[in-house]
Image 1 (tube, chains in turn brown, red):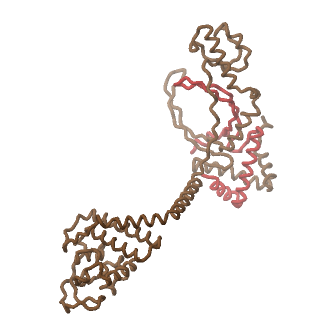
Image 2 (cartoon, chains in turn red, cyan; image 1 turned 90 degrees about the vertical axis):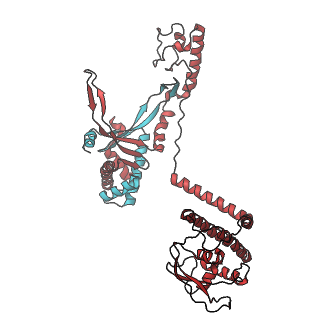
Image 3 (cartoon, rainbow over the protein chains, first blue to last red; image 1 turned 45 degrees about the horizontal axis):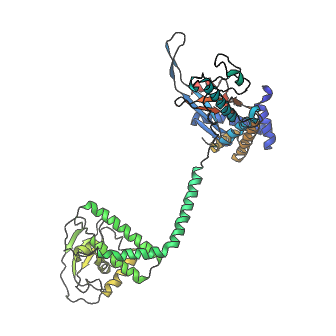
Length: 392
Length: 92
């Protein structure tokens, strides 16, 4: 046995020559390997070494047993043990020689032989009028055993194969090559492929997509008729208010993004913006508690509306609270969200981005003439375009 | 614990750099594999022995269906811990 074992020293020497290092280095390394492997095992219970296998520290739970001679119950104490699971490749390497070269009887396929034998036995048994089930259990020994089945035995005897089974023996469980899953790598590949597919589909279909989206958007306004609510609409339950707002926001930003992406002509954008507001107006949300009325009724100065950008009369002043928007204020005072750009216009000195107004900002609400409260108004459309551009 | 952790541990104790240790470890593994292939057992001092055991062919019977399956002979790589390992493991 001694020459059949690679000792620690031999390993060290082989390592020194193979790796091209001095024996001292190899010695240092192997010693460190030994001690650290042990330490790591104690620490982590498991050490994986690439190219070899995994060492595991396993705890065996205490169990109960019975003393065979006295019959009394005893407890077998639990203990720790070190198990080694070879890596798949190594396992294959080791198992291979046995499966192929080293096997002396490998020339004849043992399964075929067994199958043939089994058939033979069944035939013989059929002649004897016996059912195969009554056949005694198979024997491992190849020597004939006369007491089992007197007549057929002699014929069977010379066959070298040990297992004589009444039923045909199933094929040996095929050695399934264990698939190794590189989880990260596979996932990455999948993701990349998916991305490419998506991008390809996107570019391929983008014209159809854009026309489809436009069609969808243009198709909506019929069902979304604006119901101009009277001022001070009743407060809605705030739960679906939040939800609606959120969905609305998503819808807007998605649409804007899509429109920007497809580079729809500006005219279209304006047209679409119209619809946005109409749809928005349909969503009736009001939260009077949030919007705090601070001051009211400044004295009217002049009745006549002068240049479109100037507002002479103020209905109210609103303070922006958390969550309030120009659109709500517009709805509150003008009956329709769509007129919020006027608020922006009137408060240009305080508003930089209409969608992100600092909390606490005081917004003056100008009085609008019926001519101004008209979506077809040229100035209004221009204003709205500008206001939308500021939100980005 | 994975290989790279072990490598850094070994590098720390032996005072070599990681690249060196990695190289040495892979070399050790290669030597071990080759010797195992040649039918030799590998002695790992203080740990145990890696050796190949022959498993005889056998027929197994499925306890419920009574199905018989032939299991061909094969070699198995087993790890046999050193004798005093058991005592050492008791301490933890």
